[in-house]
Image 1 (spheres, protein in one colour):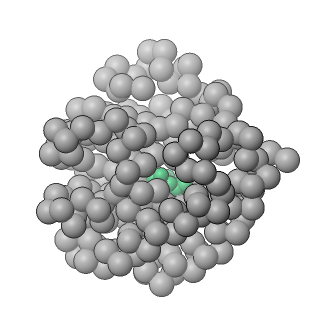
Image 2 (cartoon, rainbow, N blue to C red):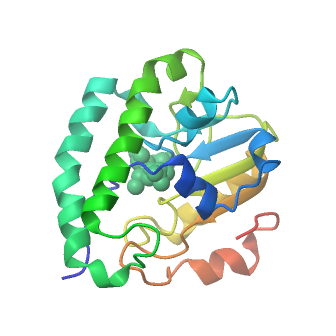
Length: 204
Ligand SMILES: C[S@@+](CC[C@H](N)C(=O)[O-])C[C@H]1O[C@@H](n2cnc3c(N)ncnc32)[C@H](O)[C@@H]1O
């Protein structure tokens, strides 16, 4: 059976996964970075530990750490269960099994949760949502978006994608998005038209 999600799920990846997804170099990590739809990923927390500061933006940050923990717990079995059923759609080179995937995700999300209150106080976790980001033009050098745009192409329209990417390219000089597939590992129906012209400065 294919993956089915009624809404966007709170599910967080690790710093190493961000590094690989976005081909982030040591120089990239020194840029002013905005992570859009970062949710409970540990990218921000990991960099904060090494003294760097990135800003993450997500509507999830309206919630308290306790409320986010509850939503993660409620999501876990559904996501890992559906991943087991759809195992053949993934490449299991770096991560060997759905159980290992679950462990890596939970470790990343715990790291996020331990950093959350301090990060909020330092304005590293900012409430905001695409397609309109609450930042000044060129406030950042690099905008990242992992597992939100294109992934939920059945729920988010072409216009939403176009506005969201324009907004990322307004607040930052460069935008990187991963993946360009839907959560059923199919090429997004919005990809060709967003890449075709309406957007001038993104690196899709
Ligand atoms: C599957 S999670 C991905 C989290 C993280 N980027 C990662 O890859 O680990 C999707 C995230 O999108 C966030 N989200 C939902 N609607 C959004 C919107 N309109 N703008 C920005 N983020 C949104 C959710 O709160 C959730 O944290």
